[in-house]
Each structure stands twice: as C-alpha cells, then as structure tokens.
Length: 450
Image 1 (cartoon, rainbow, N blue to C red):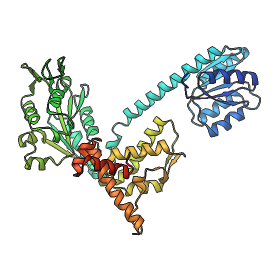
Image 2: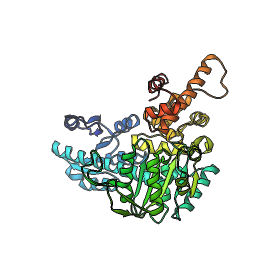
Image 3: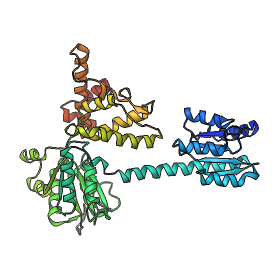
Image 4: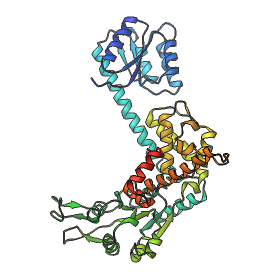
C-alpha cells in the first residue's frame, strides 16, 4: 500500500488500546506517535506537528478535555477525535462543542477508526485548500500595495484606467507583476464578471499565435482536425491580456491592428467575420518605442496599444517594499508547506534589501519559497536564503575571493534576468545574452542556477 504520509497522535493510558490503534493505523500507511498520558501528548506536541490526534477523554494526569483545550490554545488546528466510554457520551459531545472533530465510543471496531481518521484527514486537506484559496483571494492584490511612490503611482493609474474602455499598455521588466496588474484592472472594471484571458505571445510561431488569438477552421493547417475558437472569441464580454506583445511577428501585428480598429476578425482558414466585445491590456518587457524606431514593431499598432501606458517599477526601485513583500510570501508559502514561520531576521532582510533583483518580485517569491521549504527553524535567517541573494555584500574587502563572488553574482544576475524574460527558454535566453546555447548551459551549471 502507498503510505498515506500523515502523522497521527494516539493518546490512551490503556496499553492494549494503544497497540490496537497503532497497528491498525500503521497498516494503513500512517505514522503514529503514541502517548500514555496527557503530559505525554503535550511533550510530543513540543517536538512534532501531527495531522490528527486520537485522545482518550479519561487519562490519569490531564484529562482529554484539558488536553484538547491546550491544543487549541497553542493555535494547533488539526482535527482531534475523542475516545470515550459509553458512560461519557455527554462529555464527548461537550468536547465537540469545544472544537473536537468527532468522538468514538468504546468498544470500537478498528475499521470504524480507520474510516473516521480517513474522513477527518480528507476534510482537513480540503479545509487547507480552502484556506489557501481564501488567502489568495483576500490578498490577491496585496502585492500592488507598498510604501514606494512609484508603485502607488502605477496602482493609481491602473485604478483610473479600469473605469475606461481604452487599451492599456503595461511596461516593465519581467517579474514586476504585469499580469497581476492586468487582472486588477479587469477586476476593478465593469467587466469583472466576464472572463479574463491571458495570451503569452512569446515562443509561438506565426500560425500558432494567430490560431491562439483568433481560432481556426478545420483543415486550416496541418493538424487542424477540428475547428477551434480563439482566445478573443472566448473572452467576449471580458478582458484579454496580450503578454509580451513586443515579440509578435509583423504578420500577426497587421492582423492585430485590424482587430483593434474594427473589433472583428476571421478565424484562420475561415471567411466569416466574427465580432467580439473585449477590453485589451497589452504588456511587454521590451523597449517597444525603440522597436518602433528600429522598424521591428508597427508604429500604428504601437499607438493603438499605447493609449494608457503604465510603467511598473523594478523591485530595486522600490526596496522599501521588500520587507512587506517578504512577510506576504512567508505567510503564503508557510501555509502551503504546512510550516509555522513567525518572521524573518533583520540580517536576512538586510541581505534581501541589498540584492539587485534581476527577476524582480517573481524572483523574490522564489527566494522566499526556497527559504520556507529548506528552513529548519520558525524564523527565516540569512542562512536559509539561496546563495545568489546572500553571496556578495556591499562593503566587503576587495580580496580575490570577494572579487570572484562579485563577478559570479553579476553573471548570475544577467543569466537569471535573461531566463526570466524568456520564461526559461534557454535558446531565447542565449540569444538575448549573445551566447551560444551550449555556452549558456555550461554557464548555468557553473553558476549552480536551478
């Protein structure tokens, strides 16, 4: 049997019952922590984090009811199932009022115990998922809130743009939160009940991107066995995000321009005009104005997209927000990893504030997830951070070791930024850096970039 993986605390002063429960639960793949007294339960809780507890109500030193109260006072929210004799049913019902999940009367059948445990753990998993979703929903736009003037200017511009129908162009480096801003604009607008559809324009051929945008008819190209609706059609009544719009080919630029002018299109291989009502938000990490000057992007399309431009600041331009962002990610990833982190040390925050953040907020999220997953304490320290962010510190003595660290960190930052801009596409990242792909792969290995 595949191990269930969950840890269950069993507390009963009767050795026979303790053994029966342990054997049955272990046979189902659970890990069991056994206590013979209430004091033993509290000692286990000091060292372990079980996913469920089976508590006998009548224990000799501390009653199961008092242990239950202590568990809740400690902020531990795992389900607790009370075990009681027939004469203590009323007490068991009272325990449920105090926060117990269920109770089981003696004598019990091992199969019944297994069923109650399974349901309790499944319910706890579902509850955790709901908590995570609730956290995401409640804090979805917390990343748009900070102390920095540049961020607040961008947020204010986005709020004003949301009430209009004009096309918005989000400008900013990779990882600055362009999609988050686009979703916020959608949800602050009258279209919030309509669909939000994001289209990544990077890495798709002309044919595939055109099909992604406008759909295709059967037989339009090799592999088009069935007609397909495009994202523009699917987003009717809502908002479309054209992510990395600066990377689309000239042919698709022409068709996109026509759509923006007429709000109608034909599917690839089709002749029927389809008209839709969508709001366009475009985003790019390119210097699109320079692309226009170089002839790489149509000027008329640029002016159609650039009705309301909003520049998103890089993280290094809003370092006063790093501490708040760190605590946000700490809460989020602690919940996902089922860990109890209470904060982050000043030393770690100092290192994070001094780092140059080529990957911006997305890179900070990855760093905090790394720290939460590998952290061994309840507080994130500098030692929990990945080497990239804790390597070279400003003001270090210029010996050969720190010089090499500085050079490696600079190279690492360039590579990470290129990979972030190309969403991990090594061929495209190598082209951005002016390197051969094999050279980039060797550099990634040498710099220990994962």
